[in-house]
Each structure stands twice: as C-alpha cells, then as structure tokens.
Length: 199
Image (cartoon, rainbow, N blue to C red; front, side):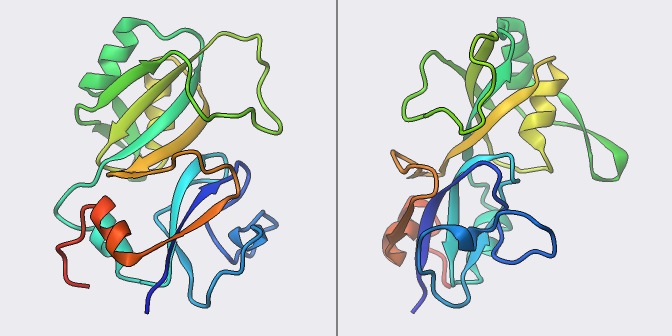
C-alpha cells in the first residue's frame, strides 16, 4: 500500500534524501519516513513550501508529465515596490532564458499583489526588514528551471523568498516549516485532480 505525505520544505534544504554534496536533506526532518520514499517534483534549496513525498513512483508522471496541466501557486517576495506595469507584463508573458540558452516566452498566468500574506513567519536568516519589497502570488501550469525567479528578474525585481503554497487544490495551509502531514490516497488524488487516473 502506497503512502503519501505533504511537508513544508524549509529554506536551505534540498528536495532529496541522499546527495553527494554537503547539503541539508529531507531525512533530517523529525519524522520516521517509510522505505522507498521520494519527493514528487522539486523545490530548490532556496525555495520553501509545499512538497509531496510518496512511495508511489507513478505520481510524478501523473502530476507533472500528463497532458492535463496542473496548477502550482507560489507566494513570492520580490525586491522593491512592483508597479502595475510590471504586474501586467508578468500576467501577459515575459521572455526568459531556458535550458540550452533558448529564449522562451512564458504563457499568460495569474499574478496578484498580496498586501499581508498569512501564515508566513520570518525566515531564520531573513532579509533586511526595512527594505521595500512586494509580495505577490503567481500561478503557473509549467515549471521551467527557476522559472519564477527568472520571470520576476525579467521585470526588474529580484525574488527574495519563494514559497509554494498549493498544487491544484492541495494547500500548504498552516503547516509550519519542517512539519509533515500524512494523507490518504483517495484524498490526495482528489485534491491533485488525478483521482480518475488508473495507477
């Protein structure tokens, strides 16, 4: 029987259980994970938030390699105050450089300013609080390498924090950094909108 977990991946931890490099790993979380567990998709070590862990190897294919696109929403803190013009550029698509040095225009996406994000505590080694910044949410159905960071850079704003808060209807909610929650297969498939797919 497969097992499914969601975690709030902390900053400065890679989405892996083993690595040849000297990095913080998922196995350092205070939880007794089962054999054969792996992360579905990745968040780089500087990104935080919702990460799915499972013993079911087919989930990655169902979620990220299916013809049906799946939405991922990120809460992003960027440097400086973002103008309406920059916001519109992000919404309509910007040109970023992707693998192989190719220019790529991002498809239209949902971007919203967030006045006061809920459930976001300070990071252990957080940024200088007095500097101007803007919080936005950005919802994508694709995930090119460092896509969000490249998109905000394309409109003149450096990404300072990046927190994945949802995948489809599966929400990070008030799960704190490093916390783990086990979920049933039926519930997680329903929330990820892959419930009707044979596994």
